[in-house]
Amino acid sequence: MNIDVCYTPELIHQFDVSDKTVVVIDVLRATSCMVAGLGSGVASITPVASVEECEALGAQGYVMAGERNGEKLPQFHLGNSPFDYMEKSLKGQKIATTTTNGTRALYLSKDAPEVIIGAFLNLKAVVNHLSKSKRDILLFCAGWKGKYNLEDSLFAGAVLDGLKKQAEFDSDAATAAFYLYQSMGKDPYYFISRSNHAKRLSKFGILKDIEYCSRCNEFDVVPKLKNGELVV
Amino acid sequence: MNIDVCYTPELIHQFDVSDKTVVVIDVLRATSCMVAGLGSGVASITPVASVEECEALGAQGYVMAGERNGEKLPQFHLGNSPFDYMEKSLKGQKIATTTTNGTRALYLSKDAPEVIIGAFLNLKAVVNHLSKSKRDILLFCAGWKGKYNLEDSLFAGAVLDGLKKQAEFDSDAATAAFYLYQSMGKDPYYFISRSNHAKRLSKFGILKDIEYCSRCNEFDVVPKLKNGELVV
Image (tube, rainbow over all chains, first blue to last red):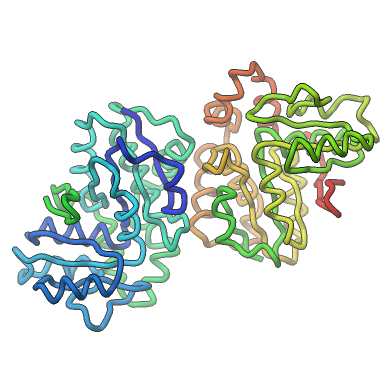
């Protein structure tokens, strides 16, 4: 199997996802929240593009979650913190969520035969799952408003590092992500906390989210997209 | 001054070039050729988008140069090898050139107040020039057909490394290029020869071009775009 990396949604047209397993990556914080929630007993998470769609699902009994530019929307039950998603009261509940970057990357992956969710929180589970894949793989970084970002690229490098014995990666994007991880991977928190996104988030006083999203292997789950909702 | 990195022409809309010095980078091989030619006494190099425009300048006495997909066009005098550009007979001549990636990046930089040409061949000259800049700087990688590429990103990292004491760089793209260079920069030829582009070029039997384009500081020139032509 071959693995490639797409650094931002604005480059996804360069890749054919129709025969690949796509790993959607939005470390700060959408995919970390999804892993934390589904790893803590949430029944399903339905990603939607707009606030209106989220509210429509809210009217059907879904817990509404999400952010715009890093901030919780006032009418929503949950923001975009992994701690929000781990609340005991959410066990067995369905969540509808809309976020700035992660939701867009999920939408753009919809033609792939398999879409899974990756974050440092489930790194080992993702690597184990992919190591058994018969398909080629695309690691799809959600980026930030279309721009390259450090934390998602670093996670892509971590996955490549975990699969280096089983898989080929010969694209320049994958090679660069692999070497980025070699130079930064010893201490993801150090580098992630210095990323542009972390600096933006720290204005909202959520350093504990950044620290938590940099932790590896807190959950042994691989959320998958099935009929528009994420489940494990 | 602040420095940022644009990894491919398909992301250039994310940057405002109107107040910046833009360094156009196409290590394999357009900007290496430009540095080699202008460093060897060529009078000027005029980058044009199409084969037809190149031929129109050829009719006015310009030496025609360029490639499509790495191969010289049969009606042209020169291909896209730095050795072509260093021929003694070209001293004082004007060259018109069209290439797959480099020309596009130059065209997309046209609104910037200053556009210069960077390659490993003139790395130190570029760093020295930029260290005196009063403007912010964008390192603009030509990429390969819109995709991220290793050799241009590595050169961007080399420039950042050279300017780390004088300049700020806080974007994730710049941070990643800087760390990529930390992990690969000791031996650019080793990594560049393993890049996708080098593998494509090696099919044309031009490994000596790749080796030459990986050399640092062969020329102490900084080609600049002035009224549509590159001069030193």
